[in-house]
Length: 254
Image (cartoon, rainbow, N blue to C red; front, side):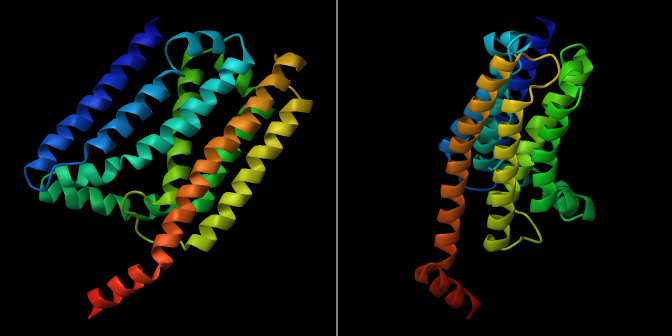
């Protein structure tokens, strides 16, 4: 119950912060699109389901519900929030000097390393391999602080990976679409292989039948979200390569 309240408070503060950023942004720029607020709010609402409520409660005893929480917190919520462009909104809302400070942070070597597609993929998929093939999965249900760290990593890694693939916010040192596509294929394979591994090798403390149900959900549910990512990445790639886009870019250069 205590964890439920904390999760709900964090969700409320996140949406409130986004609303305030919209207000401050509107003082200097045109109004921030409402659909992005809806995307952000939906992402927060989806993510909090893995931390509070029935899904979170049953996840302590059911590997299937745990996997539902993983899909919500680690894949769907990061995608929705990334599409809401929170970093862009933050830069618009902050005073000029503070905005420049934040921009320098995003251009730092540390940020450059984290947002690199390979790093983001390793943190995202590699983290799942560590969680399910070691005793970490068992520990997260025994200690609240371990559970908190695991959930924080799952969301952060999912968000970083989504950002590294789609670049919905300003990102310096961008990699090409071809490079990101190759990394995405590798990450997709790693996620699929892990699903099949869990089907045959249940995590510590998980019964075989439950592991098989959870692995199937992970495989097909993950593929569905990944399909959306693929469509978005290909659409961005198409828009960049379209003749109209190239003509506009050449005119701007003149």
